Length: 301
Image (tube, rainbow, N blue to C red; front, side, top):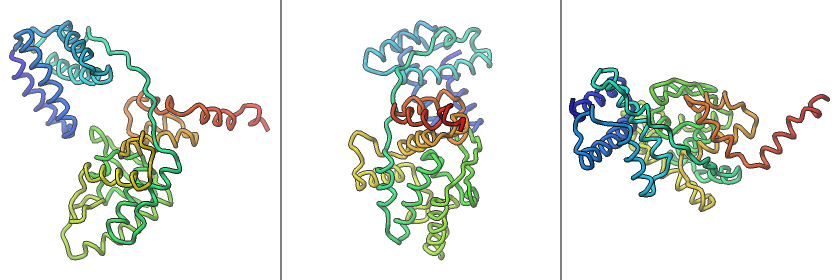
């Protein structure tokens, strides 16, 4: 069976399963690059001819060109999904990915904002106009809930409740995340201003709206956060993005003694190992302080 035929079927199967546009784009890019490599290097166009050695050789070439193990592990995740599908459909009798091990990744410490920087970012949008009030509510929600950028853009008005929000994350998995009185106040103010601002206009059903009443784009939120970081004079070594605020949320929750299993649920992680990366990135002084607060002998009193 030709690779391109199985490739088309696999993508269709993913669409039927309602995979996100981001996931579909990743699958297309990752698979097409590998298939082009197989064709150009080995002249392979039939899926039965693909071997584990060819996948390993492809990874070695990528490493030689400066790609990191984290990148090739991401590719391997895609290839495993593809060849698992091919095996289930009986296009192949052996999954070549079975003999391709995960690469050993270096532990990367996740650097994020300080408390003072986040406070300054929250104070950047202090006006009483629609855009300022909306932007402040967005920053507050990113900080207070750890919501992903695309999840925030897809958030519906009906999913924002008094005291919590309902988030539909990766794979349409639903989770509940509580909101603080501070964020609740920002939300109430935003809703009141939004309702007046668009009183004579048809608008999208998403919670956060653009100036024209349409659904926000992830790029718009990225620009908003970047602007807040610039005005707040955040350290140049830190990337001012919605995802960095998600990192801040995770580390702040751990510093405040939330257990890692609860944090994994709040963040929508399927695997606890993903959440553990945030624990590894907490600075030594924070670990020492937590150890003192949980001292066995002091808690005997």
